[in-house]
Image 1 (tube, rainbow, N blue to C red):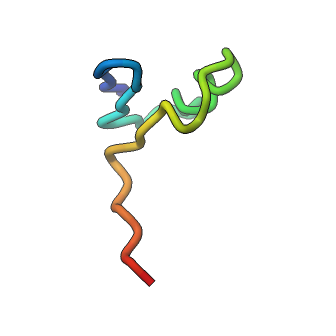
Image 2 (image 1 turned 45 degrees about the horizontal axis):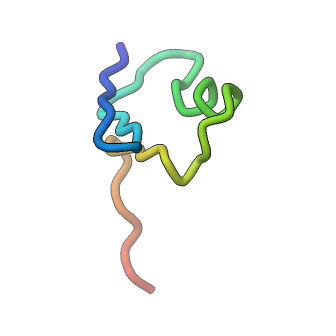
Length: 47
């Protein structure tokens, strides 16, 4: 299952349980990684 949305010029991936992650496919298609948010991953804690 994949759930994603576009907000302004950023792709937000809310869930991705596929064997071919959407983030990889978008990056291969030329979408800059800084325009893709993996909302299903926890945010890193400050160091």
